[in-house]
Length: 181
Picture 1 (cartoon, rainbow, N blue to C red):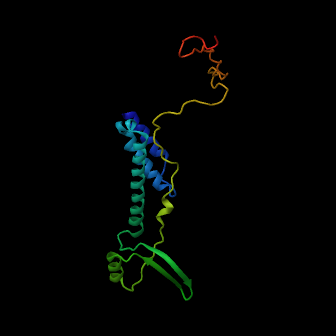
Picture 2: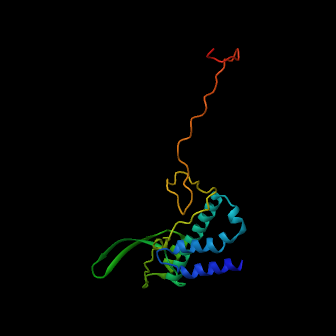
Picture 3: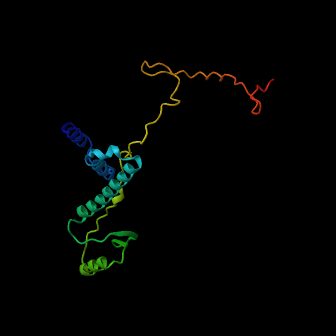
């Protein structure tokens, strides 16, 4: 168990969280540190592992969205908006749209016409991944049609056609005598 923990620590040190791959990096850490360490992981079917990977991906996405909100807003009231039309004439004029939720309306009403800071943060920038998370296959691939040459000194498989089966003697069903007679 100690060797496994050391391997996980080394893997974490080797892979820093990336800006473009943040969601995938978080998902992979959840999978590597929790899911794949559980004894039942290897007993799960490929489909069950894919479901678990999907759940980890979902948790990672929600974590990234919430982290963006925390970092960008640092405790200030905030509205999630979409930017609309904007013009540059006597300063910058910008139209924004937001949900009409009671919470958003209350925040805007309490803030009033005072100055505010607009933080432009798009969470999808952080939703990349270094590689897809893959489930263990239920059955390994069979080495069929892998080429004619042997690898690493192994004997080459005999790919010659099979000999024709021996001719059967046909008999009549009624007499049990050969049909040729």
